[in-house]
Length: 109
Image 1 (cartoon, rainbow, N blue to C red):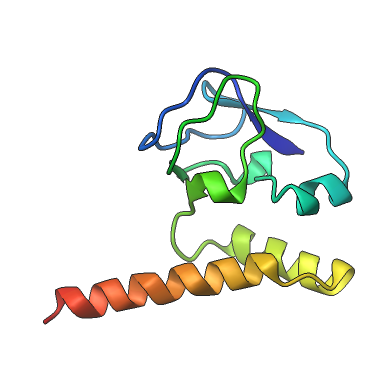
Image 2: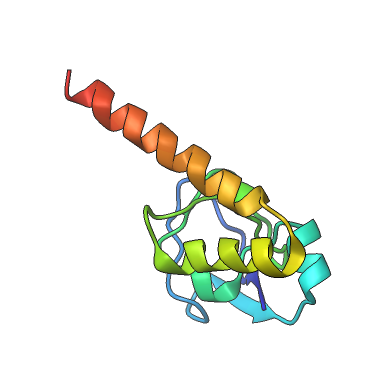
């Protein structure tokens, strides 16, 4: 189930819980979800938009910054790796975690 914008969304907005006011879910098969890097509707809460998304457009992992260290994101990455042999989501999570760690280290100086 991929996340779709209920209205025009603006960069900087933080998404509310699934099915609320900002997104709705639309059925999609795993090939579409992975190939399009679609954001699952069940994982939208707390994601911050990095670019504008038009009403009825599918949201992708490239459209958002994920909240840090969520179990759901790690499990989704494990599913892609185990069942599809794909590591793009784990690489995305690792890169973002590395950036957060570098940012935190820089702020302690």
